[in-house]
Length: 259
Length: 354
Image (tube, rainbow over all chains, first blue to last red; front, side, top):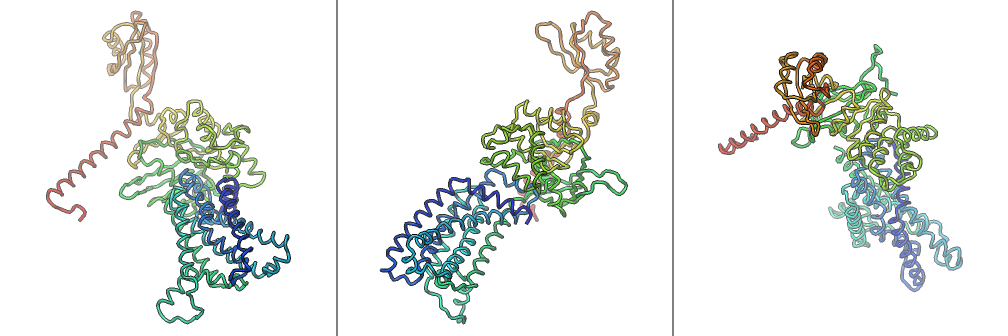
């Protein structure tokens, strides 16, 4: 992984000086904050069974198709458009280090935005401790579970964005492709919500297919576990497989461009 | 550290290419080229568009792999130790793509870190590279996107020189530059002559002629000529030209010149504006040794009132055209023959592929 840290540092710097990243982050956090406020206001009268923190996680997951493209679309598409990918590859740096470095930068920025989102309940807690306690903000496991769920989905979603950016020279095409792929992913998760059974026995080919789909089939169902601090290793592994799959595809694509 | 001395302490060439081949789909870009470049040499890579120059340079810089053949840089095989070899090569890509939104100093810092330079050594190397390329402090603080083409090119070369490379590969380094900027780049190469080996491709023949120790001419993926300018002149156009500006008619002058060398041929006769004199160009195969005799004879004949006498050898452009002409004709012949075979097979209904 020669050159990984250098790439990561430069990519992060690039994200920090890019106005589009700031605009996207600001609007995203603003909308998320407004949504969270209204959710908290109506929480007592709603029949929401999960801890209120999970609404923030859901907001970030459903908003990811709008946010992730802004973090990833530049990474390879812009390098290819300008031709700087060739200059970059002429230095002693591995293609895999390049892909992982760019992904890490996008992912870290996503984590930063997620941290920004988690500041809303923290502020609420510091200003209105009694109300925050009644909403269950003092349960540490809710924070860890929700945060972990966000991290693993954020990791796989940004890998989709990096892959989309590697296959085109046009930033807009890369952004649209990321948006489409992530929207499809979330749509499948949303439509299959509540259909998975807790039985671990496979009763037919349909069950086998569903088990292979992993969190694509029951990702949102698993949020129920994560939200209360129950960590599901299967979901983490499945997201890791998606992450590796898309980053490997991006690496192959960059190698193919070289040849 | 790559050792570049052989067991008998004989310096190994910086680049050694043996039978290198590369194919893009159906097009054979390189048809088994072999050459070598010594330490500190400045070698010009010439050839018409599509000759395979950039492909060779990209293979040597480790950007793309060759299909077959061997390419060694500093004695190390590129195919085996690509990453290690890249540390010792500085590469300036064609059109020199650079990130627009970074400042020069930020970009060079990034490139230096990528090349494994750190701390004081990194700062020192950046300072030296900026100095060699005449990029003063004011320029280094500017954004690359706001720089002129000449400055951008110098930033690219500064990047190529950062990690104290033993070999610098420059793909069209002076394309689109004004004569002053080109001269600065030539001056930079002159400054490093003997320390660093340069391999540069260019279409500007006068420039290659001015700064290169040796030339390699490529055509249709093959090396058609290789050597110093003098060697190439001897090989391709072994003639010396005498340029004479004098009064009088061509028949009389020719008669006098032929008294010295009967093989001398008059190849050009143009009037010189205002003066009423004419410019005559004679060509001979007997070389420059004859010049003194011709000049003495002409000076003794007062009727000609000689005002200019110049001995010249054919320039690189003439050599380039001669060297590539034969190859073009061969390729043209092969192309026509293949087309004819295809046409004949079509009319006879034979599947050419089978």
